Length: 144
Image 1 (cartoon, rainbow, N blue to C red):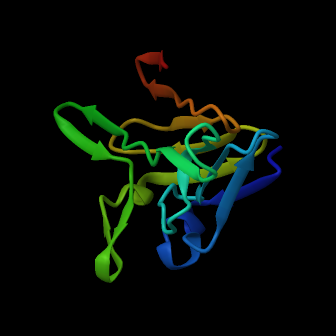
Image 2 (image 1 turned 120 degrees about the vertical axis):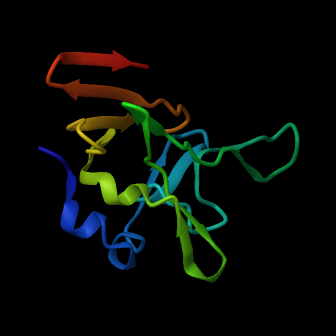
């Protein structure tokens, strides 16, 4: 059972889902912060943000976002979503989201094309790791 869980109805509605933010931290000052649909809407959002005391006293975004693309039978499905000027969002990867579960490791379940579903997981900061589990009728394929 997840600590927090959101279903497709909330995830595909950007007006509502962009207001739900997550923050993962560790005890050394590194963090991961974004919205539940992985759309960075604030300056301090990032997949991997760390302090670099040897450089200065500021936090530095080492990894802003990951843009996953699933290619199936020649068709590309972009799973990311980014905010641009004038509230323009592209690509619209949030439309493939089916479920988001938040625990120590968060899990997003997406379903592009005939693949159903794909689970992506992100561990707590300061590491950023994406694990994908692809499920098709022919069996399982796991990549890291």
